[in-house]
Image (tube, rainbow, N blue to C red; front, side, top):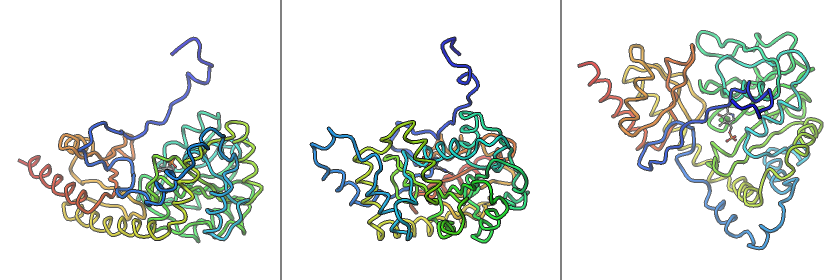
Length: 356
Ligand SMILES: *Cc1c(COP(=O)(O)O)cnc(C)c1O
């Protein structure tokens, strides 16, 4: 607390990111990073960047990157917005589209940054409970609101909506922006990008941080009709005209161009996810059906917080979220097969020693 702070600052409840430990010999399964590196072409492109150019500001419109992202899904660059991580894209979208007086709707169990942005921009919101089996029920998103935000697949559950359900949601709220946060969509869910031309109220947000293994480069993007993109650009250019530096722009463009690397690392994660879920079930855990690069799991008679602590003591970190509906669960990032096996054998040891 400080008397120098503006009143709003006192009221903020900032997001708490997952731990980035300094220790290097940990098995890090807590923040849904890729266990594989990005395409080698990314580093090549960054290294090839002309030394002289860092003197100069980057392209404020990131046109080459937006063109590459759009081309991949059959859209022109006017349908694409890029930002410094999808968190920044989400923040701009909240400010650009959701201040209409009525509450913004999002699930009670979802990405916790949505609350944080509502606080930052003083937006009223209403959380919509997931069903008992942790699903988003689209019919619950009817009625007056300033917009809807849905993570698909949802985080931390990993459960995905079908394209038909997303379409239903867009039709329930034709006069409000429906933001689909597709941070994890590449791991097996259906993207709503194919609906962009049909629905002027659809904004699809994606990131390079998960499926493209570039969390450290900070690049996120959105697809929407040009009218929505223009709204985002107006916010961006009133905040920071150069959110993506030159190295991020060339690196991200190179990542988009290496489709083979992307496809193979995503396939490896999907295969490891199946093995991890099976292994956890054999140990007695419940595992939700995940379309993401993590699994959400609980043990019917073990305390999740204690399990997380015991794993930490054995150099494995996973994510445990406090809160009424999440406290029993652990969110575990899908690592390499070897990391998943270490996790499973360590859990086996913990479960055995606890029952002595
Ligand atoms: C990781 C994540 C993001 C943000 O990722 P960036 O690194 O900022 O691009 C957005 N939404 C969800 C649901 C996430 O899990």
